[in-house]
Length: 252
Image (cartoon, rainbow, N blue to C red; front, side):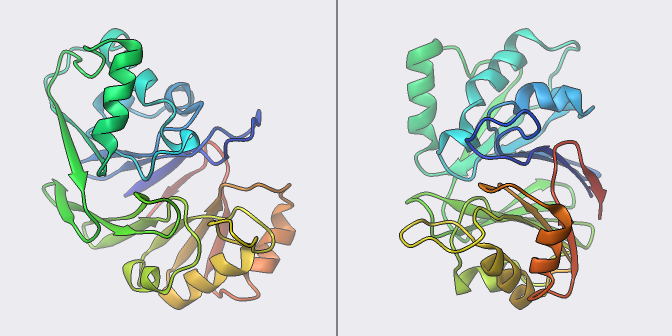
């Protein structure tokens, strides 16, 4: 399994960090996690096989995670260099169909009708679905928005997890348990009352309690000093810490 970070940023404009987006390649699937601003062009910039993408998982409906959904499908319709017949599957929480209907009203009723089949799967927390011969995708509820989901992808004995956006929740410890790699939002230095995001200490505690092997932190609303941030995380987490940045690729 291979991870490439397409967008490690937030809604805040940043020339070095696109909004949230991650590309996962397994032996039998090519899965994008979220589709924030900058991610569609970022796919090509970082050499990802976007024309052969098999699945897009949407964690929730905030603009910095789903804002380029229309652009992606416009690229599928008008920007494909090669003919494609393989089906594409859009996966997300209940309510994703409402988002799609709004985009169709804005951009045309045929927006989600490229020249290959498109399937839509609306998932409830706890669902596990097969996305390849030996690749599975499972989701769990996160405490962020009404619909927000975390995701766990398992393939050939490896597990990669992604928090989406969330605040700390004990229920996520089991869901992320023993993962080979956890991609976690790390929004704030200190927890902010009434704001459902993770602080540095929250991230480290979650990764430690879940006993994940490697931790990749992204989605920062603060200026990042990489060595300082790594040291702060390692105060409460003993595994490998990687500071996420756009274009970074990791093999599991």
